[in-house]
Image (tube, rainbow, N blue to C red):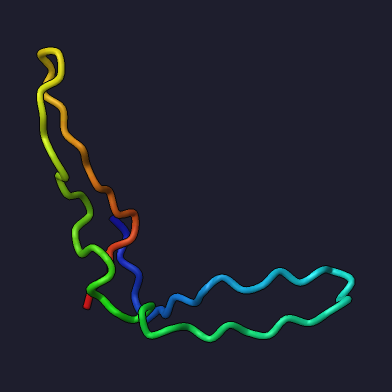
Length: 70
């Protein structure tokens, strides 16, 4: 796991702009949902379910490649 120092704010995807600048796009301001920690997992891996299939013990995992710290 790599810890990044500092504070980083996620922004929504912006509109594509052609390289010939035939039009200019406006910046999409972030919604407050982007800053809500409750929307994101604080665990790297969570077991969603476990079950037995044809004699094999299997698990469904939820893997979060990015962990948000409050």
